[in-house]
Image 1: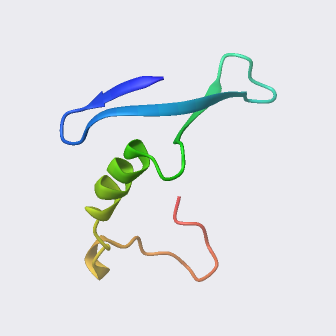
Image 2 (image 1 turned 90 degrees about the horizontal axis):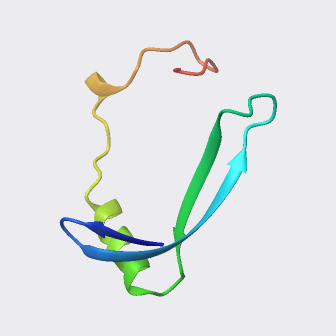
Length: 68
């Protein structure tokens, strides 16, 4: 599949579509680049722009409790 990102350009991605058991109206689509490819490099560049949440952005949870 060919996709275009406004910052890093064209991305050639493989994909797989998974059915959600028990709900035929939902699917999960996973897109992945080939290892050591221009698309993988572009995705790594985009991933490097993510930040680490500060304590005031971290949800308050009880230890061992899922935040969502």
